[in-house]
Amino acid sequence: MEGETPGVFTGRSLPDNQEEFLKLANVFFPVMYDIKHLMKFCDSVHGGLDKLAELLIVEMIDTCRQAECVA
Image (cartoon, rainbow, N blue to C red; front, top):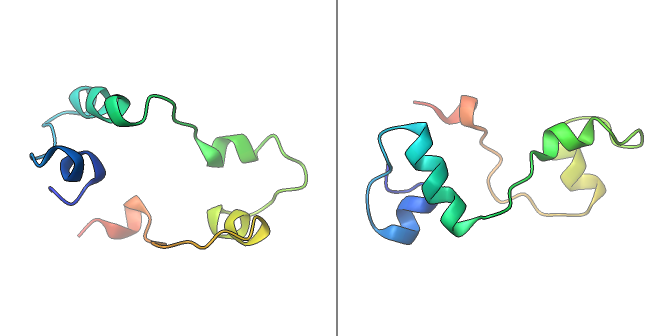
């Protein structure tokens, strides 16, 4: 799947395992946050990522989630 973000940056196929993928992702994104997890601690934010984007007035470019996109 060269269409995935690290594959686009490197021009190579994705690593075969999660550990190697995370090492590669860390090169390009040294700090990552689980937004969905952080939302649990915000009393004024309820709903999913779509709702959060709406509240923050952020345009969602790709609304396909990992579980929904697996062919």
